[in-house]
Image (cartoon, rainbow, N blue to C red; front, top):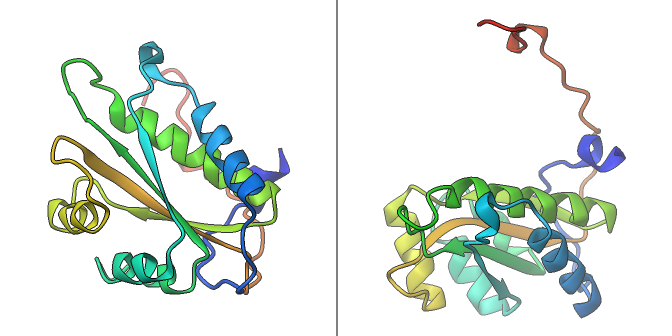
Length: 165
């Protein structure tokens, strides 16, 4: 699947709007991720408003690209460690599916970490009125690329262990 190798973190975007049809494709891709016990312990906040994107951009030093983004998707979860103890894994799978779908649609994306940085995620929750019982897992910055990045071709033999570490 070429999208795995072509997916890169894109932080510079054009002004071209992402269509509602493509937003739905991104959401659907995320929602088709695997989920432990099929619990699907995630919610996704779609952010298109430029003022809100600018506020989110100021939540930490690594979210500056949201000022240029056309769209952000905020992946969050009720994070119930009793009922859904694998919520971080599930949210990670949702996020990766969205990133790959974005690449297939020619949309640039950047995964902006959130959890477990409580100070940062509390700011995001306040801006978006996310209830206290939720954790913000990450923000995905999206827009049509205004930069070119070479595809990845990573393989690290020293990271591979057969049978034993």
